[in-house]
Amino acid sequence: NAGVTQTPKFRILKIGQSMTLQCTQDMNHNYMYWYRQDPGMGLKLIYYSVGAGITDKGEVPNGYNVSRSTTEDFPLRLELAAPSQTSVYFCASSYGPLNYGYTFGSGTRLTVV
Amino acid sequence: QKEVEQNSGPLSVPEGAIASLNCTYSDRGSQSFFWYRQYSGKSPELIMSIYSNGDKEDGRFTAQLNKASQYVSLLIRDSQPSDSATYLCAVKNRAGSYQLTFGKGTKLSVIP
Image (tube, rainbow over all chains, first blue to last red; front, side, top):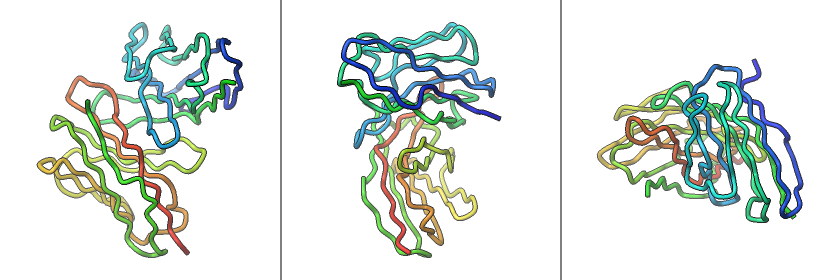
């Protein structure tokens, strides 16, 4: 019973490099989300998806991209990494749109130097 | 801009006492309310959800919702040192909106 699995757990990037944060869930949830969490700033929504093939921007999408080719996978792509993208990234999934909370992955701690 | 406000704390309570955590939200159309617990260096964990005005109890936890005052709270009875964590209030807005809006969290410290 894995839930939401994120990889990698830690990563150091140099400015200008790119990477993909992986997220997989095995609960057959249609709704998936990417958040970033900065100290004292709370969780901010980057992108979300309501099903395979459907994605939309959240509050802070600049510098990121996503795809959703399957129900299980929702990777987050960082292009041209910048120090402002240093953060902890959480992937989450949900069974339904309204009266359901999220199940979070364990997070990816990313540092851009 | 939909906002969820929480006192950042830290809130310190002695072991065995009641901890009271509060949250206000700006969007009157909000319909679902959640409390998450986050230990340092870990991911948020759902502990309570509430949808209707009034109280909802689950073990030592009670969530309270007052939509007229746009206020939701979490009471933790018989607080234990293991309850020391940051508590995040989260709100889902109108039907058809899919995102949770989170508060910045209240850090709770239970003193043995």
